[in-house]
Amino acid sequence: MSESKADVVGIAGGDLRLLRRMLGGAGEDAWERLLEWLVDDWFRLDVLGLENIPAEGPAVLVANHSGAWGLDAFVLQKVLSRSLRRRMHILAAPFLFRLPLLGPYAAKKGAVPSDLRAGMARLADGELLVVFPEGVSGLEKPFRDRYRLQPFNPGFAVAAVHAGAPVVPVSVIGAEESVPKVGELPALARFLDLPSFPLTSPFPLPAKWLITIGEPIDPPERPRAAGARAAAARRLCAEVQVAVQDMVDRERQRRDTLV
Image 1 (cartoon, helix red, strand yellow):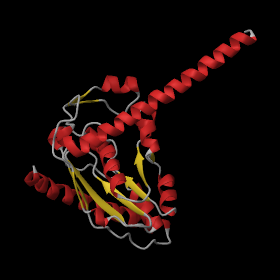
Image 2 (image 1 turned 180 degrees about the vertical axis):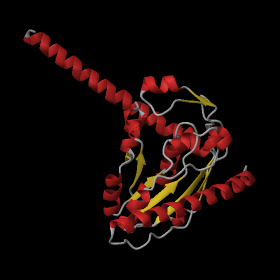
Image 3 (image 1 turned 90 degrees about the vertical axis):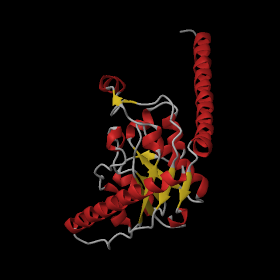
Image 4 (image 1 turned 120 degrees about the vertical axis):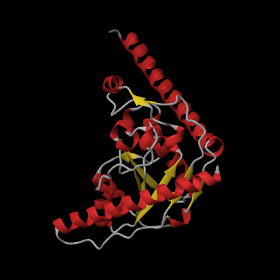
């Protein structure tokens, strides 16, 4: 290739990368504005219990995961970022970061791939972690099983015991009705290399949302023996799951009185 042609190709490639960054930035700005509108106007979202989040030091916020495609994580991040004056990180499934627009947006807002070591490192730095221990299973349940929590992954409890960090239970009500799962397309999920591809409303339905933050649960003192630490983490995980399920059941009734 001649020097002049190489220069043209190099310039064109640079222009294309710049265009992608510009379009990506525009898309992220549009997504930000859409989230603002959904939270304030479409979902008429109320938040209770913000005072239960520690103002400093490490803490793990544990929320139920619901709705067909994980909108609740973005809504919770938006609500907390507007209300808190401290950095937080949401642990997200690795596939999220492969998605156009949503992946880069989540990373810019502090999301990190779900990993026990990453969580421990953030807590060691005195930061907030937001986790959805049901994982993708919370999103895959059919509408008839709405608000029935799936088994929690105990990784968050291991990290909390290790760091001596309190666990703050969080209930998110509204996502199940806004993005109800009515079916799924497994062939399309395999083609796109996604855990699942749900059939749901093409745009979130205007259900009333209510986010409630409960009182912190202190972790047990960190045992020295590895087996004892694992057992303590399992007990903490079970205690937190019961607390979140109780909150979800109670806050569903409270939400219905606010509609």
